[in-house]
Length: 254
Image 1 (cartoon, rainbow, N blue to C red):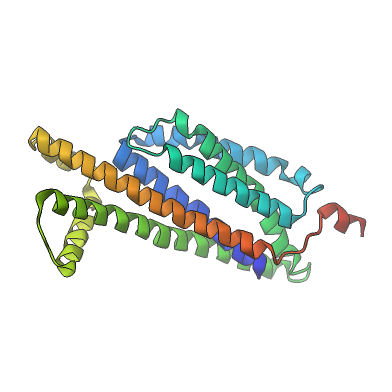
Image 2: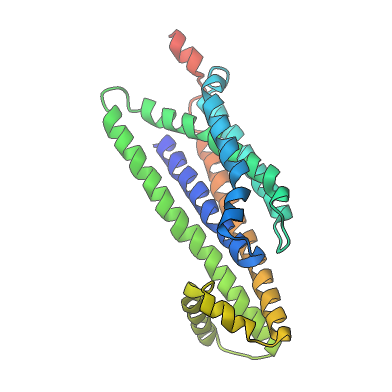
């Protein structure tokens, strides 16, 4: 059960992160899909390479220790990323943070799967595999729903608050909520050519103000989302304390 919980949280972390960062890079920084994909290459490469080498690491470290090392890599990567994220962030400045985060993802996947399946034994291996897959899908859905929703709510709420503050308009909490909902609905097609043309027709002073508001709100929202992801990662660390501290080599010897 502990392994399944850690695996589900792993899916929450990677899926939530995979939603929040590209959205931020598109809205606040203005990266196109190709540039966003290029930015994520260090994450993908590190995750693949470390995952391929995790079998060797298992000979010297128990799954428990590997998971705990992964947690450290996750947290370090997120903290490094939090220091560089801004409306002017470059692809190069994200290489190290994303590589560290990717290394954590690659190192954790194998031991979490092994712990979850080994606990069930050979007779119930098929059932355990199905439950593990269910946990992964639950984590993906939860990551998108919770982490993504908090990020978007913080983003749109921040935009509304800054617009109201800059104009000096006072509204009730109910009216503010309606404005946030209206902005969320309008933002469904925020990047369409029609909206781009409409924004281009605004006075330059208004365009500048709008851009600064969106950028500031996006930075605040992504920082909140990253803190939430760190919280899930630390929950993995707590749960890992309940895992046995046995190396694969020791089990093979028995």
